[in-house]
Length: 566
Image (cartoon, rainbow, N blue to C red; front, side):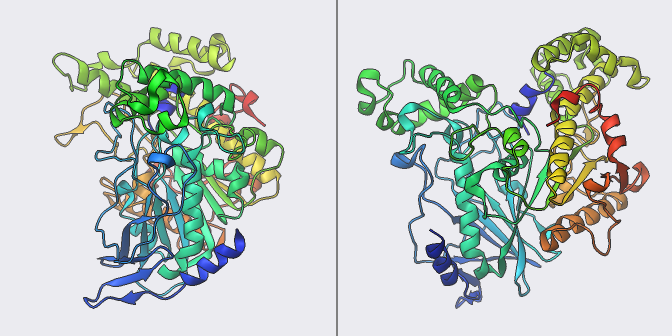
């Protein structure tokens, strides 16, 4: 979640086997009774959390600093004393301080992961979580309560990866021996997956049964691993949550290098760059020696602006072509997949805009009865024109596909609701259908869902116990996350708890067997059978099948966005 989507919407096998064998020993007990696991790098000590045992801040790669800045991840240095952390390690360097999802205490030294295990004996299936945040924010700490999943008999590993300019910038000076540059954040994820294959048996995990899952940018990262030749064999199943956006939007390496050079020029202008940059040449030594004030203070935001939104690029190594082209050519990695999105994805981004406008008013205005912060009909028309220019769907057609009088009786809300629906359809829902259809056509198992709970607690906008925005968020982007993890605001009543239990069963059954179906949850037909599973509280319609045709028609995938099919 975050800026990228907001800006894009409305506006050595043998060696590995040897290491795996070294790490497969059962957990040991320290003199004080603590559980200690020996990994290939060194011992790690558990934090007991009731029925869940957590190992925090395990290094899976060397700190990406100095000569390793903007380079493929290198092995972590070994250690001897047990690592005994009680919380997640520092987040990777984040975007500017204006982002509401920015994690404080961030650092370039950030390539760590957390392992959350059941307290019983394994081997347990393994689920590797890739956090979202538009590839510019986020970390593993928000997902430290993996109890809804772990309690069902799986291990959850939550990983960090380099973000923003540090994870995705490219420049000719940074090209490797093969001539590629960029996508370091995805390489970090691949290094973490190799660590899991090699070490998870020591934690009671089944190294041959690994599911990757992620939401938003994390979901897009999962899609990237499905397309990347370097990810082949690193996982066995995949869950994409709101990640099927921008499937054809990856920049080429040449395009990214040009935009990265522009961002560097902006960030380096007038700054004291030190001896490594004498003469102003952008050499690898100069870039890797840039001071924190330039990197943190200027480059992160300049790179985001120059690219129009951070995401993996076609670097020729991690990605050899766009994700869409990879799937269309049948060159993707084929594993069982769950893929889905939320009914009102883009309401999150419009609500973020409303919150920012209210906060910047003088004085700040958080009276939801004041509708002046909602989108106007005129602004909707301007947005339709902008979307027409970006997508090729004419402004006239936009108005015909999303007539304001079809969005309820509240005239003040109609433009915002219509804009949010158009953005949801074009960015998430229809792209999601296309990805599912392509996977199904290849003969791979795929199940599709839509999260639809209109009672889900918003991620922001609640002050003093009351919701202070005019726009209802409904089943907005990221609001399924508290139903997957034990997060604040999750499952507050019996209906929501029942939905959370069902989703936990689906997610963990899939991790165990490659099929979400099993005792305790309604049947879920595969997408090839023509079904999209609605995930909703009972009073909103419950957990039940929708036909794929009904889903497509609901989201105008046959009309407005038919050209996106591949």
